[in-house]
Image 1 (cartoon, rainbow, N blue to C red):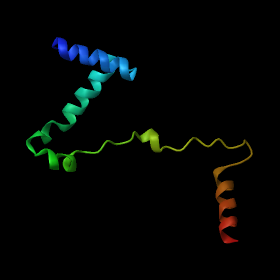
Image 2: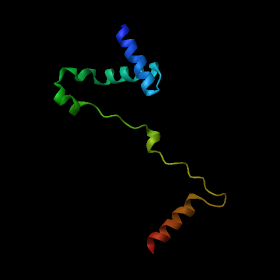
Image 3: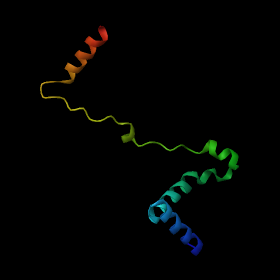
Image 4: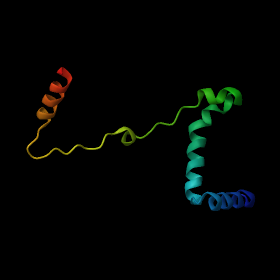
Length: 85
């Protein structure tokens, strides 16, 4: 890494509050993700760039803990009564 790059990395880490290691990992990940697209003109590259996907946990619902005297069948029965009325 050149002195100019190292200084730019230090400045960016200071500005963002992130570690230099984290910034390098992110840059490398982005480079690997978009490397094959470099043969396309910049004006169409964004159309071909794969989108980032959210982790499966981002869409997960919180675990529902039922009281000791209630089962999932009880919940379904209540829902059926509500939908019938």
